Length: 238
Image (tube, rainbow, N blue to C red):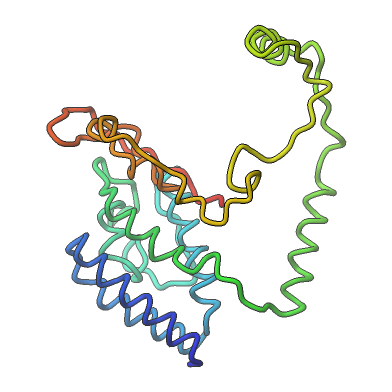
């Protein structure tokens, strides 16, 4: 392995150590060994491509209610050998069906492992670049003509009426879409520094459960508040 791969594996060892403490899952040590072996044979693409695809498959399976087999890893029953201890806390080992009470902490840990280096910038081959461009062109060609807004659409008319009432004269036809408000619009280099959560609200609805992409418990039990619990997950789309 080159020096960058060694540093990446070391970073994963630190993450696994933290997640073991969080989840009390002993099989994570074995999973770290699998990560080291795959990086040794496949290089960094295992961490930047294969693991994110596994994460996408996992969270898509949550939406569908059944774990979908992933060819990059061997299976043990209906679940993969990799991260088997965590996935078995969310899906049935025998049938692959979503458990009645899935463990959202396990799902959180899987997300951290799969997407840790997803955004890592690395050089890519000309073949990979051409494939990406080709997919964009194919997507554009598959669009069924142009999409036009209907001026008589009830939603648009209602929005125009409400916005005009609050902000003054408004017409959707003269509106130019743009980024914002957000990190891109305001060119914030460190968008995480702008967030602030009030303690009173956190007592009832812990902010960390609602600000983790792909992991959205619609209600939680916390600090003595008896809220009906139902986990709702969305796939990683970022």
